[in-house]
Amino acid sequence: MSKLAVLQGVRLKGRVSRADLAATLGEDPSEVVDDLTRAGLLAERPTLRLTAEGRGRLEELLTAERSTVDLSAISAAYNDFRAVNTEFKALVTDWQVRDGEPNTHDDSDYDTAVLARLDDVHQRITPIVAAAATQLPRLSRYSTKLQTALDNVHAGDTIWLSRPLIDSYHTVWFELHEELILAAGLTRETEDA
Image (cartoon, rainbow, N blue to C red):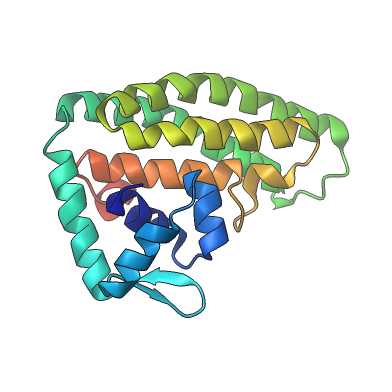
């Protein structure tokens, strides 16, 4: 487990327990977390968060990582992502809001139609993640995380579509989006504009 993966995992979560960090990273990062905490890059009170020094070190690590990738390949993956992102955002909006009001989820036909669109989004995002992971192998974990969330939705547990405090499809999507923005050398602010 790399220091970059741990620091970035904490950054993306904001504040996170060790157990939730291990779950999102797919392995136990305790040894690295302990090293980073001793070095003053992480604080644990009681959840983990980045310190100012940790943010600085993470930026250095991300810059070094970016210098090893084919920027045109990452940019192409990000541009492909942006096209699917528009569809995914519309899907989540339709799940949460119906006719300008919060969706009460009492119309199963409507909800089923919205959720059916998730399969198409998933089929389209999977090769994009694979393409990005050829440049940044640590991103390959997003395929597993998206698939897990999708499997939970298919099992009827629809909180896995957009609940914020779990690795729901939407949460993982947001984190992947952040990763691709950074990998392409962009910022959220420039992309939102």
